[in-house]
Amino acid sequence: MLYLIGTGLSLRDIPFRAIEVSKKADRRILESYTSLADELGFLESLIGKVEIATRREIEEEMDEIIRQAASSDIAILVIGDPLAATTHYTIIHEARKQGIRVEIIHAGSVFTAIANTGLMLYKFGRTISIPFKDKTELPISVYEYIAINKNAGLHSLLLLDLDPLNNRYMDPYEAISILLELEQHEKKGVIKQGDEIVICSRLGLREEKIIYISIRHLLEKKPVIGKPPYCIVLPGKISEIEKEFLEYYRFKPKN
Image (cartoon, rainbow, N blue to C red; front, side):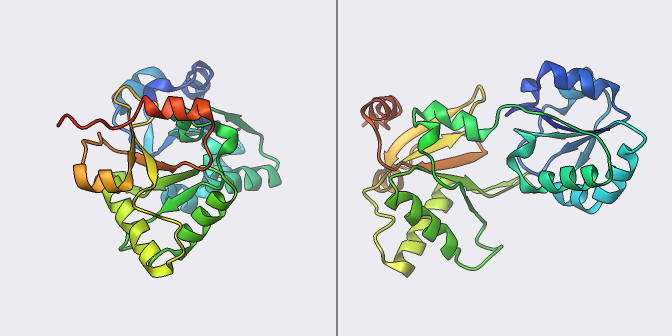
């Protein structure tokens, strides 16, 4: 049997049913790529020894994992929700094609925790990932997707690139720099310095920090933005209750 298990936004958020299933598994693999995995000792005290693997390593070993799941219980643990990444759809599909049973245990992820900002989940458009500048040329598609969401009045959730194994996390300042560079290149008025944005740090965790601020004030005032991982929301058309909620997070300089 193959189990795809979400641990939630923190390893301490792992669902009770996931603990029960993982304890009985013959092999437990924690995908380390997508976020922080700094509470491994706590997790292992609950479910036993865990292997650490990057998403790429899981992709490369997918055939072997599926083969093992034909005669053993294999648990792949994913920080957040297991179906937030398309890679996991492939694993499920391949396992089912070979007649192997698959069970999915869901958990909280950035896609639900983003509601902490007060922005309504049903009003978000396409989620957009911003890659490190050394990974790709200027990502014009990022600009295009933001434009589509904005024209429809929808909020844009921007996921900032990260590489936890090398302790590398894109911060909001780098992300905004990329967006402004895209605007300078495309010149369609999609990103403006007067635009108000929402910066989220460690969303859903105890150290969560949310700031509502204009791009101009972000660059001028340089507020403390908390610890990684980060994401940014570019609000679309906001309702009165969303506006009131956002004002709670309004950046207020001390001087």
